[in-house]
Image 1 (cartoon, helix red, strand yellow):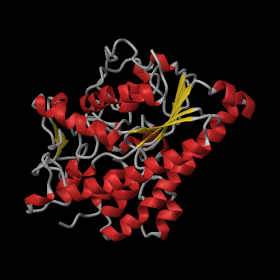
Image 2 (cartoon, one colour):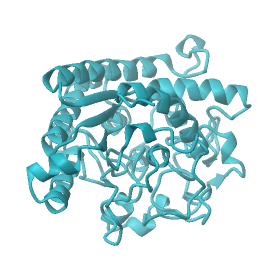
Image 3 (cartoon, helix red, strand yellow):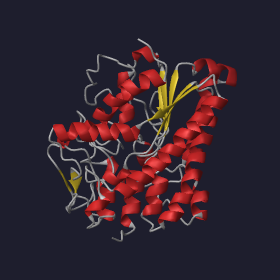
Length: 374
């Protein structure tokens, strides 16, 4: 099934201290307290953007993430630039660490005492120039991973004053390098690139992420999580865009096998790159963030609780409630009254409840990978 360019645009467009948001998880108070993180730094895309895109874009106030129904689950019911009905995974990771939510670096009035969020919705691992050479276009933001790293460098220049001071100040910081790379593939798939072309593209994306990890190590990072990709064949946008009448194309969760295999390939190459980085940097702890496994766990929990697994909560109709002409936040789209019973919020991003369940699974995974001991 052909997919028109409006989906690509939505992918791209797809806070202050925020003490007013949904209450923190009971999470045995702070399950990551044993890691003794005092700061968190986030690079990435819309999975983690807490409000940078709506601040950097001249059309920021008109983006769907800047208005209802986005943010409707927050106690203030206000949109913050997060691509969800409420909190994101990075928010729950901060809360589980006993820290305030990590503010977007583009919020000039925010405090960055406990870290900074550099993620931008729609961002790619590869630069815009590299994407152009592949005839792939990012139509809204040029704030790719290399740009975010420059923001980070400038921030640390002010925050630390010197490399030696950075090594001391960042000793107990957590660095999240991603999730990133998903949009590189999204733009390629929905630009009708041939699968063989996109497969050839994967090593370049992974190499860009590896280079970013090397860069944050040079800044003074000592504990780093590098998340992989989700099983994209389970997302409503892909189920809608690549639907097929062949039942053999779907797995037991009605996810598209071929697309999930593609995500698995990316994750396998990423894990290999992390292993190489760990050998080269024994003084640093570099952990793979298993977002694929966390999503599989989410589906198991969601089924047992009677969740809507693949229909989006907010959308404009269709089998998966994802319609490229009436996407969430635009006229003709409506939001469900009970997003806590849905896995998908808008067909591309997850609900707050889904993110919460995934983080609950990831917390145990992080504790041993990051050498955090009770």
